[in-house]
Length: 141
Image (cartoon, rainbow, N blue to C red; front, top):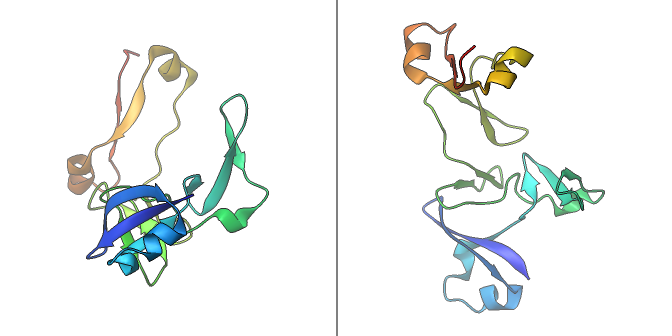
């Protein structure tokens, strides 16, 4: 069994688990593209007994950069699945086919973590001042 994404007009509309023979027998077989469940950012991962994931020893299983999801785009030139762009200002990282903010997220201090604070992206703040964008929210500090 393998995972397959149905791609219509470059967009994933469905993801299923099936045998290759089943896909080959479909009238629209050419619209189904295999995807790798444990692949993210071009790396295939293996889940450990404690639930953590580590890169697999066999990276030939890392198909098409990312596991496909409904709404993802499939770029046949890159042979890669890409999640939807989260914000207009974010840039595609070619090596991973993932989106990255135009400025790095600040590091949380221990005080922030203890308070339950975290950063979110504010596109309006970035558009007003392209040195800003990450907003600290959550617990009080």
